[in-house]
Length: 302
Ligand code: R5P
Image 1: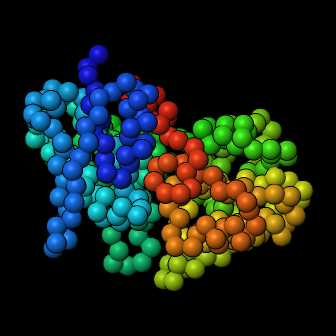
Image 2: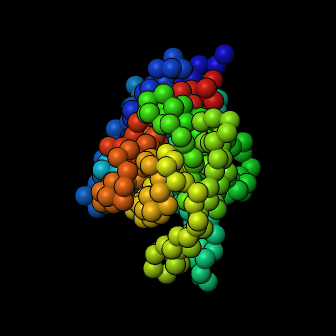
């Protein structure tokens, strides 16, 4: 088997190190800084470039906004890493982006907009990625633009197992906060148990203001509601879904989001709406993660 080297991206240090330990793979760290004019600098910390030559190199770098930088900075760092590795003639470059920023820019909602997720994906391919791995991308269809092999890994089994084992959930029902999340919610429900039902909200977002309107008659009286979504950003979707679930008679409500971006006061908004438990993953480094995706990544990067 070819030796694997994991390049630990600045935005995914914990996840990359955990994955490397499971895989028994070597890791290389990066030096990074921002120049006074705002430009990003990154160097892969190698003594000799031969260390990379003919090796299978796995770059792990999330592109979410965290305290260490915004999505644009993390994307530029990703390109720095891909192009540095490419220049050193590896056998293969596997690019792992646990959270892909701009994934929600996958449709033209208003005249004059671009499909930025497609532009970004093509740029990653053109930079030299041989394979791309993402986790729970907002809309998997976006990946079809790629000509390289791609993998959209499903975190729902790990999330459902965590909740089954760690929380006292008696009478569960899964609620999908919008039609786009139905597949995800159904997968979650299936992993949770054979007879766990899924209820669906209808959500409309004002394309100009971003305001959301949620409607739906939910049969959740005295149930333990689990709301499963891909992204928790401002917490608007999640807090509306929690409020409606509570109003519909839910006993308890759990908020589950693969990618807990948790912008500004999202945590407060969600907990104020009526839950004590927010479950996320470590696709983005922030205070919420509970369920690590390291095992899922390691299984798929064998
Ligand atoms: C949208 O369709 C996504 O699946 C999420 O529901 C949304 O991005 C969450 O954003 P926010 O937390 O700002 O409502």
